[in-house]
Image (cartoon, rainbow, N blue to C red):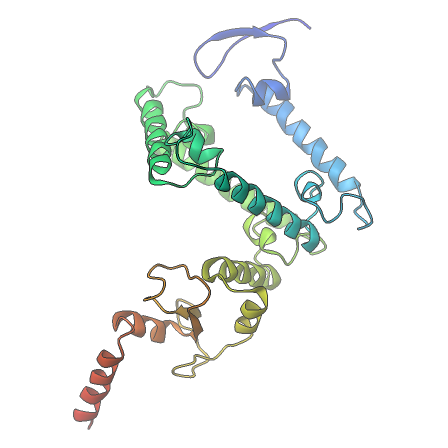
Length: 299
């Protein structure tokens, strides 16, 4: 193969045999039209090959993390296996942490070892900040990637051109995915369909809402399903959730933040009642005083 000279994103003249291949796009970070087209064709061929392979459910990899990661299966068995695998991997890494490792308090400790101590979190935060500042300080406005989505996402450029291009690309991707939806996809009616494929049908929205409740409030799937079936506020008994939608209330004295341990979850409330409890800070005496005040000035 003859070499082709081209100027890459860093302003360097290159003459490489990988030019115009997916390897040039992935590993050498070349963003010329030939490398982008080669990468696009490769991804399209991969998707077509995976789509042509019909999943029957009798495969040896079915119900494993490999089925989720490498075969693209999104059935409940493969999703649960993937979730268990990630949790076990994270716990295994964290159980081995003693605090005197050479990587402790570094970016590697946060990214690859799963350590969430203050030292590792601070190191990772500083690394991200330094990366953004380094890229932004080097921007002159004459770069070949200027005014592209790559400039916004990877080079951290926040000029109007890069922001507009990135916004248009995101909008086009969402519309492209939605236009291809038939309703027979394997991911249809799952949180993956809502988050990744941008499907906004009722089954996908319900699955995404259910997943968020399980993650945020630490409750079982059965409890989340039983609460999802309720459409009446426990306090005012209205069927209208309000602008903010239904809220799953929990004891903020036990868990002050937005997330819950699962043991302090209470009932489903409308937006107004949930806001009322928040303003009163869950204090019974304040609410009793408010009742007495209303009774005193009742007309």
